[in-house]
Length: 219
Image (cartoon, rainbow, N blue to C red; front, side):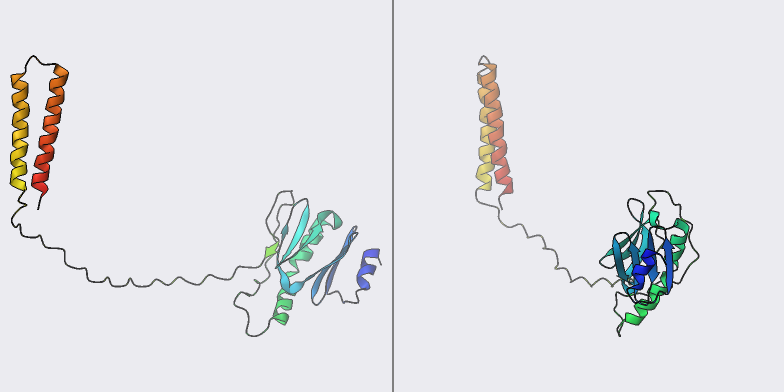
C-alpha cells in the first residue's frame, strides 16, 4: 500500500472507485471525491460538482458550486485520469439525487446521461471540458398581445379666421413705407458712400421684413 493510499485509509471511508499515480491518490466515496497528494488530503462533495475540465498551468479542475479541486496532470497518467473523471458522472448524479430535498429546487437539473469518452487533445491551452452539467432549459418566451391603444382625441379643427389683430394693417403699411423710404433714400443719394448705402438698404429691408412678418403672424 502506497503512502497516499495509506493516508486515504485513515479517513475510514470506502472507495467506490480509485486511481493511484506516482504523485497522488484519487478516490470516489459515497459522498465525496477525495484527492491525496504531497500537499495533503482534499475533498469535494459529489453533489456540488458541476464541471470537469482543463485549467491553467497543466491542471485538471473539478468545478463545484462555490469551490474548485485542482488535480495536477503530472500526478496521474493522463488517459487514466481522464477515464476516471469521465466515470465520475454517475456518482455525481447518484449523490445529487440522494441529497435532493423534496420538492426539488427549481435551479437543480439532472445531470445528462453518460456519453462516450471524448478524445480531447492533451496540448496546453485546450479548454474543452471533460464533462459538465447541462444548463437548465430557458422558459419559452410568451408574447403578449399588444394592448389596445386609447382612442386618440380628435385633432383640433382649424379655428375660423376671425378678425385679425388691429395692428396687422398698420404694420403692413409701416413695412411698405419703410421699404419705400429705403428706395427713395438710395435714389436721392447716388453719390453717397457705397458702404453707407449698402447699410441703409440692408437695414431698411430687414426692418420692412420684420414688420411685415409681425403683421401676417398676428391673430
